[in-house]
Length: 186
Image (cartoon, rainbow, N blue to C red; front, side):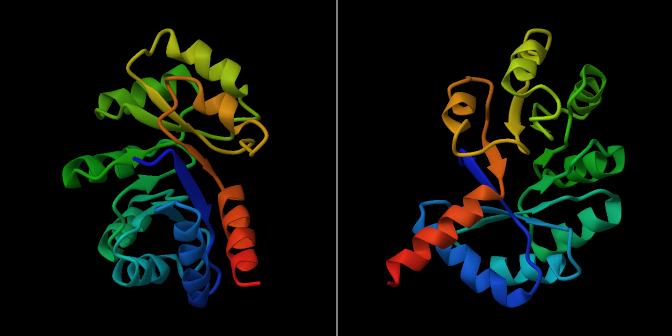
């Protein structure tokens, strides 16, 4: 797993051909395409076909049907804002990494029951940030976190310095990559 997981919202399929090359130019070869838009499944399938060097996952997956759609489109990992037992069961059956949003001990324990040891921590800024992650790590030393929401360039290094951080997610990676890619063309 890469240390950076850009949260990518595709509103129109053509945006895939703008965003993914920009991410690759910035050295990021992973994209979490969210199920926040009607074209998410199509965008994942298109990205998998046209950008084979990128690891394409599905984000904002909130139910089993979306998970089935994402897997059918070729997603190689699934991310949810919360914990879904039906999504966890499907990913477990298909041996696909599932990173559910877990911010409480109860949610982490539910994830552990499915063998999940890496969870999304969302929204990180609302649920206590790095201080909360360090506190949760004490009773759950086997858990690694992917903080998202409230993680920015200004606090990125602070999160990455903690050994229980598997990766950091955020939409700011997309914005920065697009800016760098546009400057390249100037």
